[in-house]
Length: 228
Image (cartoon, rainbow, N blue to C red):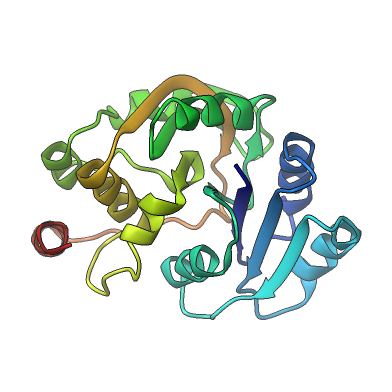
């Protein structure tokens, strides 16, 4: 199966080189690393440009409509049978692809794996993402408290195509992808951390939301998951 690694970039010049270097050795000659750059300046491209000599690396200018739109753009433009979502400032651990693909080949349409939380210098904090989030499968459970984190997800083409286009009123693309996968196929949670999940001031994280907004989001995603 052909793999597409989908890297949504935005002002990622500080860490993106390390991430690309951790991804490429795990890909075969037929796979692709598709980078969609939403940055307004040229700094991120300067870091990516040396890797374009590798035919597996493809560079696209992003849609400039935010992270969810950028991930959707990547999913619509990839050519792989399996899509690995990828953040610009993390580092993949050795054998991530091999272990995730083993679960895919075993029948999973979506795989979510654990991650080591680190500081900006990749020093482990002693926490893991699954422990922090209390990650568990289940549609109702993940509407109420989301386990799905894009940087730790891979999906088959049938799974991500079922989730396209993204509804405009959902809170997060990764939650939506996970819930659609659970509705239509087998989702597997791998307890082994397979990336270093860098938390730093430049990380793309959401701001604070009100309880009313959270209720509206849950209503919206429930409506959409029932209707798909």
